Length: 334
Image (cartoon, rainbow, N blue to C red; front, side, top):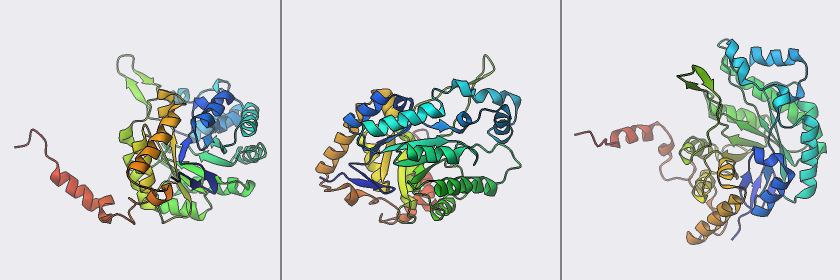
């Protein structure tokens, strides 16, 4: 049984990767992830705001970032509220690289070109095997065009790629008008991997207190379908590796993502809910399922349900949408 996969040039023992979470803020937890069977670990993100110490820089983010009304200022934590500064992050990264044999991938989260390049270099020097760029950007300014948003991503990618020699992945949201075209642009610009998809923070309201509710809900298995769709559509059409993230709570989701065409499958919510040792459950479940279905390798199953390989390629397009609506029967319909 060969569980090996290759993710942006990194040889992994199997496809299951621990994605960024507070768990990776402790070196002992990273060691536990390796012991539990993680094929690689993506560290928690170093936020661009942590690299900015001048109030003018923070003011820039407020005027160009997520929202324009005054209350939105409270969405952004003060720099001192972050649980690790840049130097602490690099120290943890270096310690993790020295302590474990699996690849350790650093993560940068931000929205501009400023401040990233030097720290990307520092991450490489600290031993990171790759860097994941999480460009968390909600363009609520209605004067900002879709083209300018995409150009921002491309410029960040090009700047970081030019500054390091290790692979660079982009963790993306799904909200682009033509995601396939944009993915191809990122691929052409040198992205080594695309991680699909980031979950953008969405506020809730307390209707009694008339306040914005700040909370984070763990992902559910019902959230994998959009990721399945685009991984299945992109498989075989771009050179970059594809990673799936969100909704992985059992080996079933791992199998589905691999069949769509993912090279790596990332999980956070399952570990926060069930503990780090749940990585063993995911890996063992994948292996048992492959044995039962007589798959000899991950490579054999990878992309088997992509658009290129299914019997009915229109199942991923509008024709299937019409069929679903026509076939749906409500118990209240006569």
